[in-house]
Each structure stands twice: as structure tokens, then as C-alpha cells.
Length: 252
Image 1 (tube, rainbow, N blue to C red):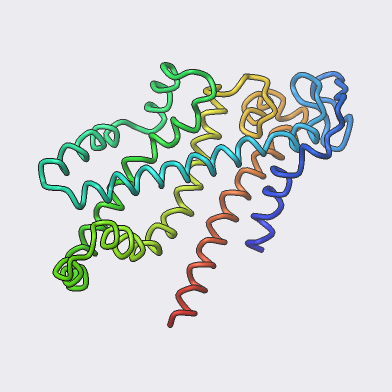
Image 2: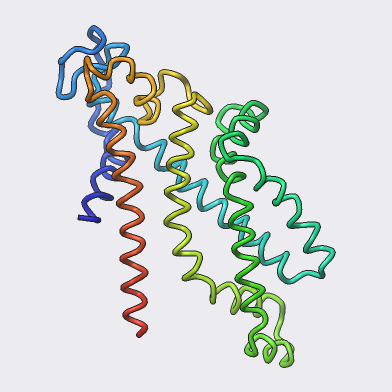
């Protein structure tokens, strides 16, 4: 079931655009023409579903991966630097944490150029990831094994990246599933609010927003993209949990 929940929306998101005809016809808004009827401007809902997931999925993956790369480096640097440098690195992130994510999204989007949604989502995730990595690095760095490596004259890279970072991979992998889901919902919320995407874009979240006025005329224009977003998020979390449990059992 978990694989089905993940595979269906992921397959539609990645392969869907290949099955959409080059010339798209339009009809009257919210009719029953086609497999799922038409949307608020008369476009075929099924074609929009096929087109609307790729940008959402790719943006979420890029934003989450970029946030982990930057956040991991930030957290590791803060954990291994003197106290003054640690404070200088972490206090600006505390300011970002005090701002609600949607408010930060709207403020940064108003100042950022078009197409900056990936960077905005990265900025929203950065404080949490950096704090998580720093906390894990401080705990692992206090272990006797790390002290023994320091006494043996091992390099900073070998201790911090080779041992400390590798020791926290399970924690970060667990967090990644939740963080990816957060990226999906944050990007969907941004698209729903019209941030970072055109108002008539072929996007699942935009479809939910723009078609909600015709919910009782053609419910599939809203339900189909909303269901796919939920399936993708839930399927991803269940799959990550299953992989982590299997890895734990294999090690036991």
C-alpha cells in the first residue's frame, strides 16, 4: 500500500507530461468533457493533472536536498568552532525560527525574483536542519571515540565528516522524510497563495486554488490534484519509515 501511495503520484508527476498532446483544446469551464471534466478556464483536468506534478516534485526534492547540504555544513561548522563563532553562526538562525514559515515565505517572495521558490523553501528549512545537525554533532563529538581520534592527530575532516557526520545519518534520514513532506506542503501552500508560480500554471496546488469556486460543478478539478498531493506526502513518509525499520532490523 505504501509503495502504491508513493508510486502513483510520483509516476504521474514525472512521466505525465509525456502523455499530454501538444495541442490542448479548451471547452466551457467546469463541464464533463474528457476523463475528469474541465477546469475554471475550460482546460482538460486530466491533462492538467498530468502536467501539474513534475514542478512540485522536483522543486521539493531540490529544496530539501539543498537545505540539508547547507544546513549540515552550517551545523557541523557551528559545533566544531569556538563558542563565539558558534554563537555568531546560530543566533541569526534563531531569528528566522521566530518567524512563521508562511510569513517568511511571503516576505522573502515579495523581495526575491521570480523562480526563487526553491531558495525560499531552503531558507525556511535551514534553521531547523542546522540546529538538528549541531545538536547531534555536539553529542557525538563528546564520545570517547572522537577524543581518541583527536589524540591520534586525525584531521578535522576525518573526525567531523568521516565519523561525526556518518554517525548521524540515521537521524537525518528519519528527519528527511518529514522534511520532504514539509517541503511539499510549503510549496503547495505557496502555489495556493500565488507565490512563485503564475496564477494559471499547470500545477496541482494552483489547480486546487483556482478550481475551488467550481467544486460543486466539477469536484474532480479540485479533488484529483489534492488527492495526489496527499498520496505523495503520506506515501513518502511511510516508505522512509519502512526503509529505516528494515535497516535497523538488518543491523540487529
